[in-house]
Length: 506
Ligand code: HEM
Image (cartoon, rainbow, N blue to C red):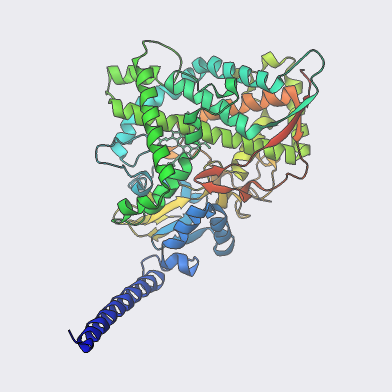
C-alpha cells in the first residue's frame, strides 16, 4: 500500500470517530435539553443539571452527601423539588398520605424496583421487595411476631441483653473504686441491638456485648446500607447495570455474598430448632405451617433483612439521641430527673414500666425528627396513567419520595428546625410544628413492622443508662451536627465517646 492510501484510511478512521463522538455528545446535550425544558416534569423546580441528567444524583449517593444536597435544594426551591429527570423529592407533610398511604379511589404507588432489584430471577422477593403480592403475603406471615403480645413475650429476652450491656458499662467495678470510664456508645449500641435482633431472628446471639467485639456478620452488615445504595445507583442505568456492578469494589461485592451465605446458614439452623422460644420465628413458623407456607429461600432472605432493619436503625437512633443529649445539657438534666424520680432501683426499669414517661418519649421523637434514621425515603413509582401528589398532577412512571432528613429540617414544617427541642412534642402547636409531616416509621402498608419494638427498646435502654450513669462528652470539643456525617440510606456513623460517671444507682 502506498503512503497516501494509508493516510486516507487513517484520516477516514479519524473522521468516523470524530463524527461518532460528536453525535454522542449532541445526543447527550439534546437529551439533557429535552429533560430540562420539554419533559412532562419541566414545571417542577430544581437545579438545572439534576433536572437534565441522573448522574449528579448518583454522584451524591456515592459520596454519601445526598441528604445535605436535598436539604439545600428544599431550602432553595421549596417543598417539591425535581432531583433527577424522572424523580421528585417532597418535603410537604401532605405527601405522606398521597405517596405511601392507601387513598380511596387511587392506585397504590409501588416500591421502586431500582432499589430492590433481584439479583437473579430465582431470587425470592422479601418483605422489603417491590412485588406487592409477595409483600402482602410475607407481611401477614410476620404480623403476629410483632404484635403487642409477642412484644410482651420478647421483653425478658431484650431485658436480659440489656442487663449484660449494663454490666459491661459498669465493669470493672471493684468495691467503691469505680469512678468513671470512657466508652464509645456508638459501638456498644450497635453490639446491643444486633445481639437482640440476632437472638430474636436466628435463635442465637452474636455475642457482641459479651465479647466486646463485633461478630463478622455484624461487621459486614454495617456496610449493608452502603452496598444497597451503590447497587441502587448503578441500577439507574439499565441495561448497563449488570456491567456497572463491576464498578462496585470487589471486596464489597464479596462481603455481601459472604453475608448472604452466613445468613442462610443461621436461618436454616433456627428453623430446624424444635422450640417455642419467644422470637420473630415462632409465630411466623406457625402461620407458615397452618396457613400459607413460606419457602426456605424466603425465610433466609427475610430473616437477614429483619435482623438488619431492626438493629442498625435502632442503634442509629440511640446514638443520635444520646449525642443530642450530651450536646444539650438542659435537656439531659430534665430527662435524667424524670427517670430518676420515677424509679427507686435500676431493676424496676423494664419495657413495661417505661411506656409512659412523657419527656423520654418527647426526647426520642425529637431525636427521630432531627436526625431521621431513615435519611432518604426509598422512592415509590407513580402508577401508569399518572396521579396527583400534594394536589399537583404527576406523570405515571415518575419516582417520588418523602425525604425525611431534608423535610424535617425545613422551617415550614418545624420551628427552629435545626435545634433539638423535645418540648415541641409535649404540647405541639400546629401553627409552628406540623406533626403530620413527622413519620419516622413511614405510613401505610409498608410502614415499619417493628415500630412498637423499636420504641420499647429505645425507652428502656435510655432509661437504664441515664438512671445509672451521669454521662457527658469525653471531649467537650467533640460537638457537631449529626447531619455532617455521610449517609448511605442510613448514617455512616462516627464514634460517640462519652464519659460515664457514678450516677444514682452505683
Ligand atoms: C428507630 C428504629 C426504626 C426506624 C426509624 C424504622 C423505620 C422504618 C421505615 C421508615 C420503614 C419503611 C421503609 C419503606 O418505606 O420502604 C421501615 C420498614 C420496615 N422496618 Fe423499620 N424502623 C426501625 C426499627 C425496626 C425494627 C426494630 C424492626 C424489626 C425488628 C424493623 C423492621 C422493618 C421491616 C421488616 C420493614 C419493612 C416493612 C414492610 O415493607 O412491610 N424496623 N422501617
